[in-house]
Length: 638
Image (tube, rainbow, N blue to C red; front, side, top):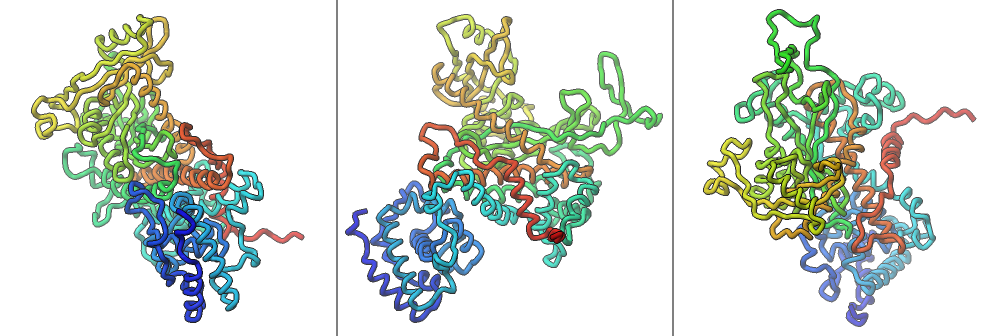
């Protein structure tokens, strides 16, 4: 923007002087200024704008207010969030986060426009000081925090910059994200929902956190602590579907196509809706950053939380008329299942290990790895006999995608080889119109022979078989071929490309006789060449985000004794939420640092930046913030 195209700041100064004769409040004056927005250039491209874009006029007023008060970006964001009248005065539909303010400065305001805003703000401040109007904006000499530019200029080490801003961001996200969860208790309840979520956070940080003993351990340091029973009742109320009255013994594990809908499904739907609301808040906070891009890459995987109770009766508990289940067809060995064993506990490949299992969909690749969808796993276990049933992987994937695509645009899905099923391929291709990349299991002799050609011929580094038809059987779980217009005519959903490439990762490779490995991947992407295949398969490593996050989420999942699925599912969901909150705070800190430190940032061809806030530091800060207003003061021993 040429300097001579800027409006005359004298006119705005005259306006402000007139308004100060009527109003003795700086924010009122800024809100009533007639800004010449038609003479100023909004640098947002049309492709950048969306329903979440802040109005240009409103952000001009935000920056005037910031500069008049010499506030940091975080400080002005806090003020606007806490004082709703500022949103009304400045014409904001909602409170902007600090990253949104930073993004506006960098992407929407040219250097000349920033200088113009600073000039006008200086004039407004001078008028206010001349009239001794200081009640709404503090002047610099009153000990106001230095702005980000001043911090960077002082050569503050980045770790100190992170330490300074992390508590503010954690507090903001706690207050914004946790409100998505609503226990539905009366407004006059002794302990607010905020106290419940603080208690749940503390549970995630302690061993054996769900026991009454652990509650007594950390509650003795608090004033008026939440009682164990109060906490449990609040979580159960949150997980109970609205408008539906039932006891949790009402339903047997009925067939999925039957009625009524199982209790665990109703519970999951209720909690998932609230979890999605929290994730939407998080995504809105990171979308304004250059470090978040859409369409995104998604990774689907499964994890389990151990359940240390056997489903089988001991010899001394078996009654003569108990039904016996054959557990070893070769020897005919039988066992007797317990009555009332939790239906959502699944067996594993490892003998004697039982788990509550969950599938997650995670944003992967260069973006902050956020878990955006969670789905319970329900498999038929042998102790259920003929009464057991399973939810297909196709349905699990469909439900994950339904949750995720309401929040974020996805163009590629990568999943573990457990999802190597035609029904899953069909769901991703036909129902959600996304590309997928999934490793094949040890499959047919035909596919193995193709892979052998790659191995034996030194001139071939990869082989691609295109347009292999994907056939769906009429009895494919969750896919009703007769009712699906996409597959009814030819009885298959789409063509698949098989890629045979060298590999060295033990979790997806198939072994040759000499112990070297190769991999077979399936994708629905069109026009894949052998050269493309190696590059595409290399992207599969981005799925490791899901594996890494499980190592962080599982320790955050507290041990609880309850088998009530409201408690079980919520506990895992909340632990995922804590993981996400850490990732979002870390992302925001990296965004701040990249704005303020010239030697910090990511190049156009680099992967995501290293974490600046370790998980341990995030958790420690969370504890301090929770307890800072509730701990008893220490004894005065001086």
